[in-house]
Image (tube, rainbow, N blue to C red):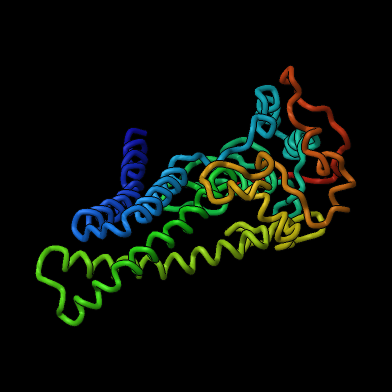
Length: 325
């Protein structure tokens, strides 16, 4: 037990190394541009780019991606019933009864309702368990080592803005340093520390820009299709079968789900997304309409006294539960 805890502690420490590398590159670029090159004409714009870059990176790192609420967790009594029940069919029936109260529409590949045995929760649509964070994450996109965090419902906008402002930062540095890079290339730049900073600034800015350009373009495509990275590789499964476009409700509404309806706040790293991550509109509205729980998430939200919402319409009792991590 002590060895396992020690290994987990070491893993958590080493997981910050990629973040420290990015932070070191950011601080070095600031020092090189402001104190070594000291391009006064560009300092105002440079600081705006640097602040937005740093702000979005900070939000991507320290904003929890959000986990399922207590309504998707097994209550103490349900957990006791489930654990003391030895018959598999009876255990499945217990979970089916709990699922009846929840707006769950996606299924496992076998067609069963998804259940996380580690977190003891029925998984909401688009929710997955992260083995690194050791928790279920709402609308999980991926676990990013460069922010040492899961990218999910609550911080996906911040991650996209981080990629965007990183590109802007790199382009601005490359564009303003290019003239000095040409002087360095032809040998007209005076010898000194700034000479090497010009070379490395140009090289690092272009290298990061190329890699970020492809990553940002890929995520823009995902947003336009309303898919996560996981869903792009493995299509979500519904009652009718797998469908990569199951959550695609049109480009405008797809963008609003991530950035909100107020376009003035789209480029500011504050949360403006729609919903609470437990329910997402489906492309096939007729599939939702058969169950009011799926058509209106307000019907299953907690009431003022903290009690659970009542069952509006039962799910198909033939639905089974699949235990998955």
